[in-house]
Length: 358
Length: 263
Image 1 (cartoon, chains in turn orange, purple):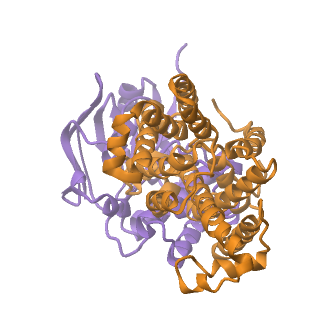
Image 2 (image 1 turned 180 degrees about the vertical axis):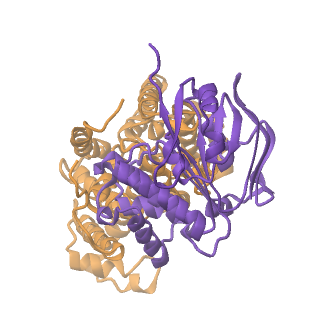
């Protein structure tokens, strides 16, 4: 590995600000492109006129259609894209720090698949029980199922891979791959019991799509995943210390078991909240933190917020590609992120091959 | 200052330590010697609070180690482990700054940075500050970790600090072996720090340590000044090696010269 691993030496605040501007530009671009094109200037003027306000009444008649498309379709979808990217990236970087393993990623080790399996099973097998659950919990029912799935998988992987306060990278990856395959296979099995409408939903859950975004689903996802993200961001300093190993971090006064518990629950929460709305979107949690680490260094206090923004940029751009390339149909977004992510992952393995010990 | 009373430790069926009693005064420099598997590292795990004894107790400042708040304890005692690897590409300075975690809790202040720089300077690694840890040599890595534990208990206002060094000189060249032990000795004198170090080289131990503890099969054989401990019969009973006693021409500290082991 090269001696200097950082490409950019900038003040953290300027880096985050710069990334934020890039995200804004991507959002502006994506909001304007689609079946109906909206010029950036119009996007900017319409974005200040939300529905159900006085300003909405003053939109010129020519722009009414554009305003409706922007506010009802594009913006909720973009909001979901940003949330998805940020949650997956923060969860990914936290997971990598927690397991001291740069290859850990929620979709690679089955955390996302666990969430997708539980939601799919709920839809296909739940029947009457799901209706009752939805009556009680409303729109929280599916996120709750997804959260239980991702939490179960996270705990399982963690229990299998750590032994006597050591976490084995090999065990973690292998267990994760096995659990991931199991979940994908079970989702496949569900397609045989499912009816046609459910089969479409299942395909959507295994490959990911932001198409279901409405303001109410975005709201639910936001509440849950932002809690997870904030708690994880607050653990950045402790996660840095974990790079010294669990025993040294313990000697620095960190309660390791509590840190592990908090992080595992929050990773499951933010991943579960997102997956219940979007399905499995792979590799974002791997690519975003790595771009950040390669350019800015491994300090989690910078890596986590910066990868949140980079993840959001990635998902916004991937979704733009997914819905425009073969318009009027859509490519599932998970295919796009995998197409970008796999070469990146292989590049990473290539760079790490001297250091890796399996 | 540090008191171990009748401490026993076993993991599974294996008895690692058996009825250890030690009492260490403030600002002493203690060397712990003993053959492989004698329980030296296990003893350190008890002293640092990482493990609690199955029997007996460890007190630091008359307070039982298990009653210390983790963060307070981390500000008073630091442990240099024998093997410590760093995940991800942190620079040497970032690694040293991790030692300040009990003070900054993730929110690094200018004060922490100054201390990290001073600690690195003490260990002759100031010039490596911005190098990535994984590109450092073995000795440089060891000195980075030494700087990290020094930074952890640097604050002059903290009274009665405890520094535990598990084979601090194993991967160092002869100059840095002496420099490190000299530094540790100096800390006991000027910074009110108690230092306990596991050292394999008796001759180095006798030059710097106030007292040497000889550990054998989980028990303290003898714990006294270097002149008393370094007698051929003690070495023979613990290590099964014959040796000759001499005295150092400079200061008269005991020096042992091992005889060849018969085939």
